[in-house]
Amino acid sequence: MDSLTEENYIKSIYSLSQATGEVFVSELAKKLNIKQPSVNSMMKRLATKKVVAYAPYKGIRLTEKGKKEALSIIRRHRLAELFLVKVMELGWEEVHDIAEQLEHVDSKRFYSRMDEMLNFPKFDPHGEPIPDSNGKIHTQKRTSLSDLAEGLTATIAAVAEDEKSFLDHLNAKGLQIGDAVTLKKREPFDGSVTLRHKSKKEILLTHQVAERIWVE
Amino acid sequence: MDSLTEENYIKSIYSLSQATGEVFVSELAKKLNIKQPSVNSMMKRLATKKVVAYAPYKGIRLTEKGKKEALSIIRRHRLAELFLVKVMELGWEEVHDIAEQLEHVDSKRFYSRMDEMLNFPKFDPHGEPIPDSNGKIHTQKRTSLSDLAEGLTATIAAVAEDEKSFLDHLNAKGLQIGDAVTLKKREPFDGSVTLRHKSKKEILLTHQVAERIWVE
DNA sequence: TTAATTTGTTAGAACAGTCTAACTTTTTAA
DNA sequence: TTAAAAAGTTAGACTGTTCTAACAAATTAA
Image 1 (cartoon, chains in turn orange, brown, red, green):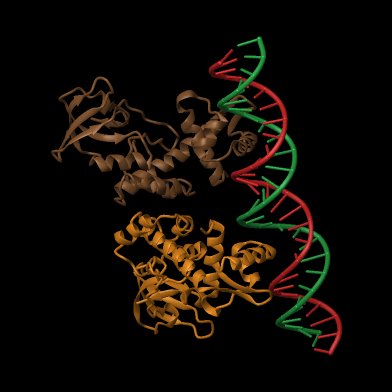
Image 2: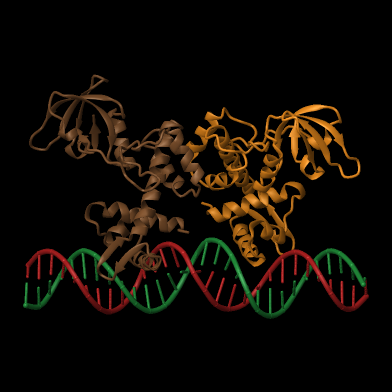
């Protein structure tokens, strides 16, 4: 019913609206790498489909119907990512682009088999929650590496970012999910942290990076 | 580079041209469920892209470039089908529609991992050969159930058809890949065959069906 | 509080991919 | 061998998705 293009709009609106509830045309245009008038005309279309609530100059909000569709797409994306990492043993930094394509596959069976094979997982390889088939998200509170107390040791459980460049950065630093790290020092003036790692090397992360890494 | 639509045209041209070498606009239109003028205009487009050789009223032929692209799409489709059956344990009759979508996924890594996981297979679950990554097909001669001598027992290795209705038909008859069957009788006047099967039941297949089943 | 900037909108064009209607060429059969 | 049928083509229209150019509203800052 929705085209691939529409699905991409819906997904982006959802993720942009997570914090604020409202999304602006300019944000969406930037995120999708599309010009504003294109977004504007798509919003009119999605509004007639009752997927978004949209009033000129007011910003964009997903309707209940739209939210449901967004969660379904996000479910497919995150299941696909986990499947690519766990079953197909691809690297966590390379699965995003593939999942971006797999999420549009129209087949209940395909996804329910993934779900089964992965034993009905709650989180994807980046630590994002996977909505269940009814669109329900099982959240949990998470500790960021930037909140860990000095001297404590913790295990990297997940990361917040789904961007290749971020994941490449971590790989370059030698960090992987499951690694144990000890927080040696936090610089008070910029929040950067120094870690000790199994590789014996000391690793320095900026606050920006550390706050996107979740530990247990 | 090629759109999903173009890929579907290329794949259909390839499969229609297997026997004769040439494909007619009407055939292609019927296969793709599209009207003739649409096919006509797409052929002009594919001709400027040097994917097909096309002269008005003359019929359609894939260029070398087109053949290479077709084999690449077919490779992806057949790898995906085998993956869905072998790794994801979906039924052989339900994988075609999913593979139809997966074949358009653009990711070398995705397909090379499938290839590895399946141990570089030569045939898909319907018995069709899988081109290797250079587009080479390793053929083998196969015995059809309609050629099996009376009284002999053989194992169902594959089927020729990739159509859901055909696969449903076999399932309804209780036949699966890997089943041993004994050819009890062949009717000379219509070529239909009676099989004995592990289920103890006798199964009657028309010639049309039997010749699409390959045995070892 | 007015001017500059940012944000959003409308109008109109373009391309991909499809269609119908009308016409032409080729093939088939009476 | 010519008339009917089948196959192919052209012209023109429509939808989806995008763009640029030009203008309008809202926000920010001088």
